[in-house]
Image 1: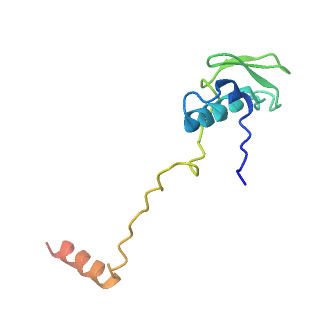
Image 2: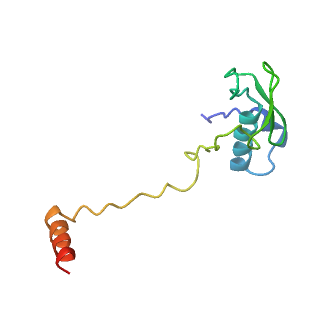
Image 3: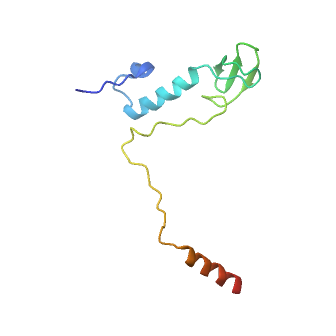
Length: 109
């Protein structure tokens, strides 16, 4: 059976722009539309007024932030990406004895 994906507000684009672009746009849009925490009164009442302008509905403070969030960088879910993440290669062949020998040679030199 085919797995159904809830696209939310990006359904309005239909089949245009590609799946990954629509999903990314949906993540950005949901992040900017949710209520954020106010840095002044710590209430979850901050809404986006315009690009980078935020207003707390409780204390009525207006302040600037990032375009889609107040201060944090957006992280995209890359599990659906076509490419696998790169793996770090750790050299386990390098032993402690070789490291000590290299330190002794550096001290002598």
